[in-house]
Length: 138
Image (cartoon, rainbow, N blue to C red; front, side):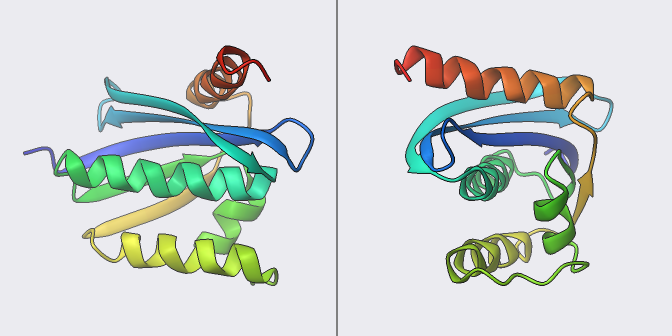
């Protein structure tokens, strides 16, 4: 069973709100890709898409039996809210935030980190978001 992993995810909407999609990449501790996921999630804002991507990433990690996660996102807001540095003010985001916190509690450790959108794996998941939207005709 795989104990530790790195997850990279991105969510985006065309229009904000608008057609939205997510991309998730799960890598081993050494950086080897283990699983990729992209999907259109309907109409959403960028922040809702980012949170949805995190929830899907955690769900996939659970399915792989991962217990410790270093989780990377390019959304400073999401990273800082999930690490407790920023308060969540919007009620619809608070619901998503609470779901992520509940999911995170099922792992031994989850650390959320903000990384620049120029990071290679963030570029990859961003491309997955755009591919999903393009394939859906958005």
